Image (cartoon, rainbow over all chains, first blue to last red; front, side, top):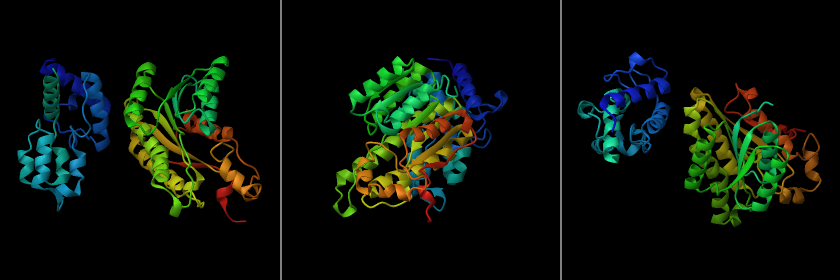
Length: 130
Length: 250
């Protein structure tokens, strides 16, 4: 099991390669969409790079639940419904969703996920696999 | 050779247009893996001919409808080659019949093979191509997608779907330098078109401005161009190779 620093460093490399950002832009607090400019297709690329870097399998949609955010069943007036929030919580136990849940505008979701969340995500995956 | 050292995967490679694509691209220096479904003998012959000519061609049996098998095959090739430069989705079937008499199987077989198979292979290669920041996908469409023929609603729907998939995927992958185009052949001399050509007889040639049926090699030439770096600024396009039949008019 790699250390937290090793995990962060591999994630930094994956994000620099996938998003074309500079090394120093990838900080734990940086948000993937707002700060690093990730678009939905970038998450596919990021997931693939993480799979290679950590030699693990990541189901699509686990890191960024686009299928939930675009499912009319979970959206009302541009916001995630309580059922939608529950789905996202189940899918993303590594992310802190409480601030977002106060006003869950779908368009704001991208600003939620940070590099630190991603590190926690990988740590969780690795520890559950190992 | 413009395809020198390119790693190319072609579906439906044992017969017809797919076979011509295998021969053309291998002759231009590519390493080619092709997929065939049932015609082992034709596949073996093509590999033997190619090998005798000093070309790098190998065959894999797979049903393009089988998503799991498709993903495993692509993974195996990507592992062996270290990359995958080109995917040509050429596997296709016809099960013609008037819609009122068309069975569910006729509909499903064509949609799942032609459109579903194209989806399966695109899905399987997309991350590898994104990862390597480059690639070319060429889908085999048909002029039947836009020009109606009786008895081919299933085939036309599958090829229309391929056109939509091609344009949409081109837009998704363009930022990653992965190009997606399609070739839409008209009347080409293959086993698959034999029944239609037989019904239409010589009359059909009169409707084609070039006054003849096309050869699979003439389609393969365009596919090879789209696969190559010579088409580096071309994506999301459906190129008709039809002797001018789609021009309409008199």
